[in-house]
Amino acid sequence: MLTMLSAVATCERELMLERKREAQAVNPRKRGKGKAVDREGIKKALSDGVSVRKTAEIFNVAPSTVQRIKKEEEEA
Image (cartoon, rainbow, N blue to C red; front, side, top):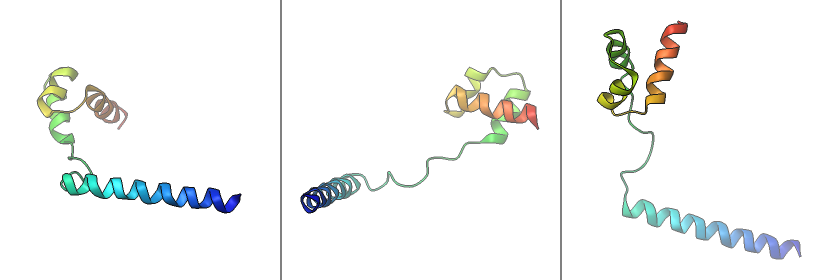
């Protein structure tokens, strides 16, 4: 019984890896870390009085990212 489950798990793993390879072949550029955030630019915009939402829009990041950077700056 245990041998049967092991064989099924191995087969599933092979299928999963095959799908992953196919996806990477279609779009090889989508790998690794995402884009870096311009933390200094965001801090400068916030210190200049730009709103959190507007800053997020300018730097093309989520408002929560801007809020997190703002909070880190206030705590430092």
